[in-house]
Length: 117
Image (cartoon, rainbow, N blue to C red; front, side, top):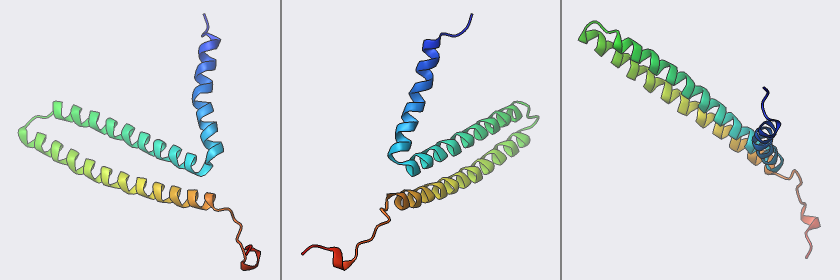
């Protein structure tokens, strides 16, 4: 038995309509938002994978010294990755701000002779 067409239609139009509306209002801001969400999602996915690998290593430890080594490596790596992620997000946000400002400019300049007195 196939999926209901009503459910598919409702799911398809929800996010698509919102995205289309946002793109129409401010394409630069929407692209920036999508970039930030994509970057954040990728980071969280990678971190969760590494957290699971660390948990597995903790469960497999043979000595307290090995446990200490696994934990210290985990924290060192996590801090480096979080620092790098903040740096990447700041760059994405800076670019988004520049693009939004550039998009908001009209591109028209006024001369002194066209100002009514």
